[in-house]
Image 1 (cartoon, rainbow, N blue to C red):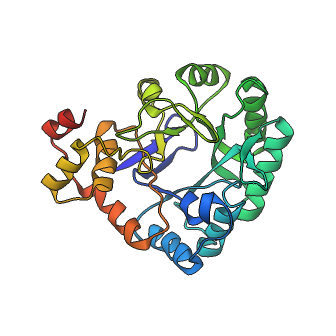
Image 2: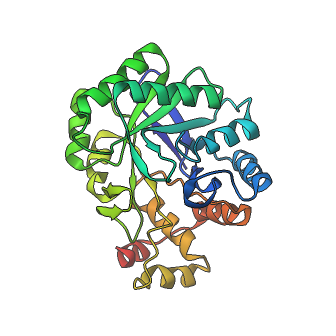
Length: 289
């Protein structure tokens, strides 16, 4: 199963529909070095061996831990590997998450990513919206499109956006992808310690209409509510884990959804990859909703 990013552009990117999110490779609270560095590097190498050719990262993971791990494990990169990063946020020493989204901030972040990833151009960058209203979307996206024209960015995406914000972004320019929180048990807006997160369900219809891949994050962290036994029932039916059924549900929900499950365990990585082989019936999907 593959999906094409920016299919109408002069440089579309076709990737496998099950990617890998690197955030969990960091230390506790997404801060600092991994507890098991050799395993973190092994997961990245195994991901490429297993056919994963889309990695999601950010310079504020760690800080800058996942970017450095990716470069250490995989540079020089395979020709078909797409590395997607995010800008618009940063971390304070107290581990809090804060906006970092002025045009100057965004340019600094892109330069940081280019340096640590050892790239002259980043193929896909998500602008994460935080502190909505402090810096107008027009200014933020304007800086992103400017760096795109300079050749530092190939494609621009949006993250953590509402339906209205995505519509506004599309009026300003080409939006290649959207990355929002989304899983079977978490489909709409949720408030987390570091801010409000619009759900994938809020933008899926617009993504499908415009041919924009929707990349769910936290699909496994927040999509396993104890009160919801439907996932467990379907997992038993298929002899699978609940995490695998969550991923299978996303893959079956829409051909425009591209999950990026993350883990710091090589065993869990292998388990997640098998979700692509699970075939959910129409009855299964109707039962899951």
